[in-house]
Image (cartoon, rainbow, N blue to C red):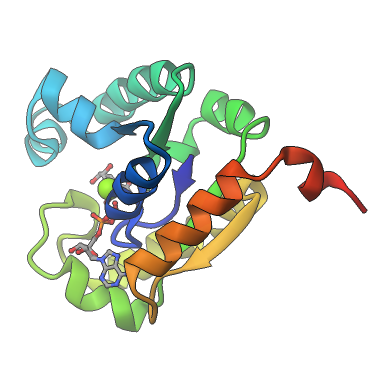
Length: 166
Ligand SMILES: Nc1ncnc2c1ncn2[C@@H]1O[C@H](COP(=O)(O)OP(=O)(O)O)[C@@H](O)[C@H]1O
Ligand SMILES: O=C(O)C1=C[C@@H](OP(=O)(O)O)[C@@H](O)[C@H](O)C1
Ligand SMILES: [Mg+2]
């Protein structure tokens, strides 16, 4: 499971990790779009509450599947999702404001459409939740995606016991 702020690289990284591990890949946003239409349109026409409801349904299903799952940045706000993630191996993907600025410029993400100030406020409000749920953290600000994906794949493949050993 990959969690973290918008623009951190969850979708691209998750896809690569799944390719390395030869397993299925699920991007929760992609499933929402397939079922309900473009994200900006859902936010615009039905509002964030409706989007979060669709998101929770898709996440609940995805967490039961054997796959690498990249969650939308705000999916961790749901209490049931938080409870379920607490039992899983969760990679927190982070990025600095400086590095994310170019990535989110002109993007279709409704909550950060007006720029880095709203991105920073959103990340600050979620920081504690992201950190609490994370088993390990990778920062994508200064490193190529291939290297990070290889590390995450190796970590996913390692037996859980090595992590839990003292
Ligand atoms: N390690 C990286 N270095 C540079 N750019 C990256 C990196 N990871 C992702 N990006 C770019 O950042 C943008 C957001 O990536 P995406 O995977 O959609 O993030 P998220 O799913 O976390 O919102 C994309 O344009 C992607 O090409
Ligand atoms: O952080 C958020 O609340 C959101 C992040 C987006 O996904 P990414 O984190 O993949 O950009 C998408 O789910 C939607 O625009 C809301
Ligand atoms: Mg994404």
